[in-house]
Image (cartoon, rainbow, N blue to C red; front, side):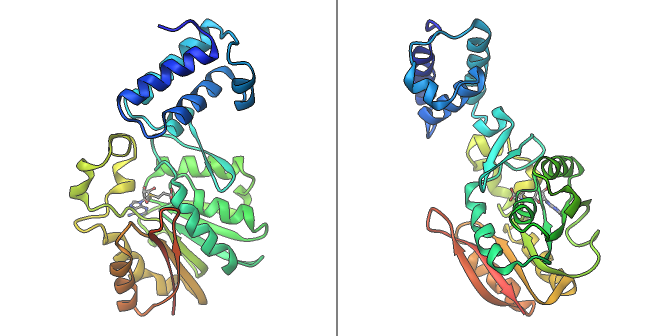
Length: 280
Ligand SMILES: C[S@@+](CC[C@H](N)C(=O)[O-])C[C@H]1O[C@@H](n2cnc3c(N)ncnc32)[C@H](O)[C@@H]1O
């Protein structure tokens, strides 16, 4: 057990996390130590021999133990940064992924002050809330089948100042939705259900099953969204979806068969074709 200085605690945690091949042991240990101590990254660099209170050290060790059980850092901290904003994350929502920023980059140029957006499968609310926060007079509706996820989305909408422009409704895709929208967006569950057991433990043990499972071939939600989109899209509106690596052709075929054409594409940080834009 190390003595409780910043440097020794950090070194101990990094060594422990390396033993189980955590991808970014330095970063994870640093974020947890900052959270436990309330210190900044600069504090950790400038004063590595600083002593830590027993309470902060105990809290840090407890957090490292959770990470050693493969719990993602964002879940331990209860917060995840997305498009420059901090979103609350709980066990009821998908841990937002950086790749989902691709759909934001594609959507923003399509929006104007009066845009009305629909976010299907909103989870923590990252897509709808980010778009409304970036477009100060736009309004939107966010849908999720999970009422518990909607509690998180609502709380993020309040925290990020868009609650008066976002309606959160529980239900199955389009079922609770009336009217037409300029943008319909979704990052639906897209993992073939049989593949979930083989995912990394930080995903399969911590992301809600409902947020991952896309049915037999992972494409079920796209079929439902493509079938319902025309009835809810404004005449010159667009549908934007995120899909898994390697699914773009299949998703494009589903929307093409439903009368849409591909109007744009977006590539994620890993070079995968991550998002598609459709128009009529
Ligand atoms: C992959 S997660 C995406 C969450 C969030 N939009 C994001 O990008 O982080 C998919 C979301 O779809 C929701 N969902 C699953 N089935 C649904 C359905 N039939 N109707 C509405 N939402 C559904 C899940 O609860 C989950 O929040």
